[in-house]
Image (cartoon, rainbow, N blue to C red):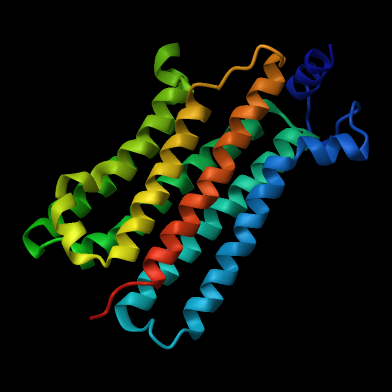
Length: 249
C-alpha cells in the first residue's frame, strides 16, 4: 500500500519533497544506496589527493590516475544525487529518468576513461588505436542506447540489456589478454582480475534482480542494489590499486 501511494505521489510531484511515509530512521534506511555512493565519492577524492602527492606517480601516469579519480568521483556524485532524490524524496518520474540517464552516461564514460590508460601502457602500439576506438565506440553506443531507450521495445529497455553494456565494456580487454598479462606486474594483474570479477558478480545480481521468497518486490529491488554496490566499490578500489601499483621497471 505504501509503495502504491508513493508511486502516485511521484507521478504528480511538481517539486522535491520528503516522503509522507518516511520517518528519519526509514529515510536513512531508504537512502543506503545514496550513502554508499557518497562513500565512493569521498574515496575518489581521497585517491586523487594520494595520486597528487605520490612521488612515483608522475607524467602520463599521473594524468591516467587523475582521470580515473575524477571520472570515478563524477559517477559517484551523480549516483549519490540520483539515489538520494529517488529513494528518499518524492520527485517527478521525468526528473528521476533524467538523473538515471546521467548516471548511466557517467558509468559509460568512467569505464572507457579508466581502461584507456591500460590500453596505452599494456597493449602493443599496433593494437592501441583499434582497442581505444572500440571501447569508446561501445561507450558512445551505450549513451545513444540510453537516449533512445524510451522508444525501444520493452525487452530492449530491460536492466539486463544496459547492464550488459557495462560488463561488455569491462571485459573487452580479453581481446588482448596475453599482452596485458605480460606487461602488467603480478600484483597489478591480480587486482585487475579481482576487480573485474567483483564487478561482474555485482552486475549479474543487479541485472537479474536476485530473488528471495521471503522478500517483497521493493525489498528484492533493494537487495539487488545492495549486492551490486559493494562489489562495484570493490572493483573501483582494485582498479585504483592496480593503477597506483603500476610496475615501472
